[in-house]
Amino acid sequence: MLVTILSSQYRFVRRLTNDPGLVVYETVDAGNRPMGTAKFRSAKVVRADQPYNRFEVDLTIDRPE
Image (cartoon, rainbow, N blue to C red; front, side, top):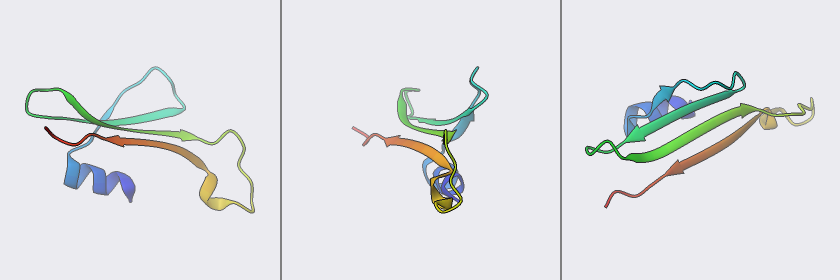
């Protein structure tokens, strides 16, 4: 759901990485400068009693100038 919102409202697109455990989405401005990054990685430890901690998410969206 988060990726759908980022893609539709902020034009994030997936970027390929050499790390198979990392999924990266980025967005750029009109001058092709990076404006935001979303990184998703599987958690190192997944616990049955914490179903919402399956992923580590790092999201950065810069304010346009």
